[in-house]
Length: 97
Image (tube, rainbow, N blue to C red; front, top):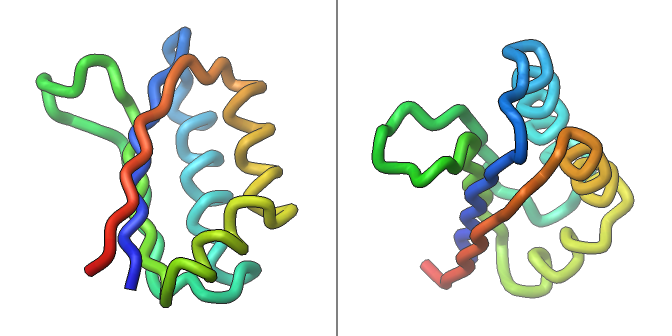
């Protein structure tokens, strides 16, 4: 299995409605993309986050599932939404479990 972790930072502060919509869209990826075992996303509440506001964890069956996820049209829609919302930076970590 593969664990995929993403931390997201935006240029400007987003409204609660914008964050809620982003989270719901992201969580729905499990319904569209094969190989996702679990996906979680939420708002950071730690004061140690260095400005990263949203965290994502996704678990995939294997590396091939992760590789298929990245170019998938539904995932690309999320990436486009992030850019529209003012994405500043991400940190991505993938590892086998």
